Length: 233
Image (cartoon, rainbow, N blue to C red):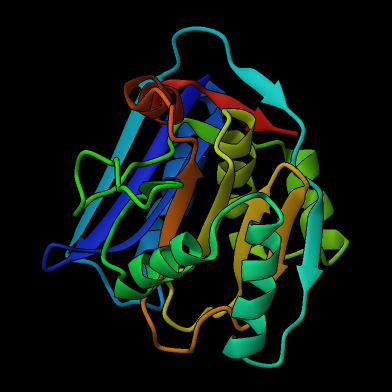
C-alpha cells in the first residue's frame, strides 16, 4: 500500500491538501485525481502543487468511524453555542473553548493547534500546527457517507482525521474549513462526529484545534498523528 499526499499553495499560502492510501495499481489514477482537485479549488488556482508518494512500511490499522451526527443551526451564534455545549460536556472549560475559537478564526495554519486544559498551546510550530497524516477511509464508508446523505466529500476527508485523532486519545476536536465558502464545521469527541452548519461565516478563514490532556506526551502523540497509518472503516 502507498500513501499519496497532495499539498497546493499560492504565493506561499496554503490552498488545499488531501491524502489517499491505495494499492500500487491505483497510484496513477489517484495522482491525476488529486492534481485535478488542487487545480480546481474555490480558494484559487495554486502556483505550487506537491504530490508525494510513499510506500507504507509497517501495519495499517483499521478502525471504525465515529458516529456521524448533523446538527443544523440557523446562524453562527446558535452553531457556536451548540459546539460549546458539546465540548463542555467533555470537560473542556468554557474559557479554553473561547480560546480555541480565537485560534481557528485567525486561520492560516496547515495543521492543528494542540491546546491543553490550562490554555497552553503545545504544538512546536505555531505557524504550521500539527498535521494528521497517513490516513484514508474505506471505499464502503465513503460510499455510505455520500449515498445516505450523511455529508459531503469534505465530510469524507474530515471523518478520517477526527476518527484517528479521537482514537489516539485526544479529548476533542474543533474544526472549521479553510475553504472560505464552506461554513459547516464540526466537533469530534468519543461520542461522535458532530457536523454543525454555520459554524463560521462565509468568507472567513478556518482552523483546527485538538484539546489534549494536561499530562499528554506531546512528542509521542505527534509521532502517532503524523506517522501511524490508519484506514477508517
